[in-house]
Amino acid sequence: MKQQKTAVITGGAQGIGRIIADFLEEEGWHISVWDKDTEALEEERLRWKSRKTRIGIECDVTCAGSVQSALEQTIKKFERLDLLVNNAAITANRPILELHVHEFRKVIDVNLTGPFICSKFCVPELARTKGSIINICSTRAFQSEPNTEAYSASKGGVFALTHALAMSLGPDIRVNSISPGWIDVSAIRKAADAMQENLSGADHMQHPAGRVGDPVDIARAVVYLADPRNDFVTGQNITVDGGMTRKMIYV
Image 1 (cartoon, rainbow, N blue to C red):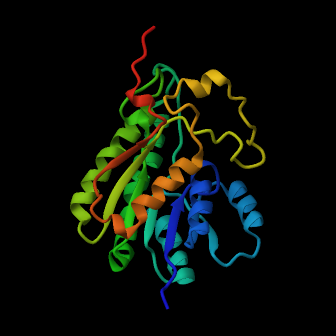
Image 2: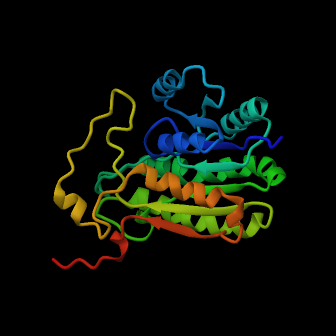
């Protein structure tokens, strides 16, 4: 009997991570959600109820001990690991003169050091299953708006970390990244923060694809990259942004 595959999604209690978790579960995966937000995690546990295909673990991706503990709990529950989705991320978008150094460092710690730590400790388990790592990068790694220095720098690092890991871990483990553009997650948050953004026709039509992105767009890309039949794809970044990074804009 073929053993069910297991995926870890960091920051999987809200936003894009939550939809990736839902989508993979529908595709037949066991899911281990690692998240630091205990309120969001508890809401998710209530939503899952007694389903045996998913667990939620409190985890700080910047802490090696926390990551090791989360991994041990995951393996104890599901016995294997086939996919790590490094999705957890924070922002601190403010003018540089107002951005504290400790805030900049925190963004780098969560968004860049976090994926390194999670990858480091998951490597032995992923090597056993010939699994893969998918880092959620961002189009902000390649273009920016004002006051996004911390976030943009962290995602530029994620892009570079991806191809470095792919060279170090191949051929046993494939490593790729996905760069979302504008993905509407305004309603996919814990109850205290969820509020559907009112998107205008202009918001949609500024995208060559004709619409703002949906988290499912990212989840579908995760499924593609995780599929072992696509084992010739590694060290790559897939941009999922409705064509916006290819659009020339004149003021």
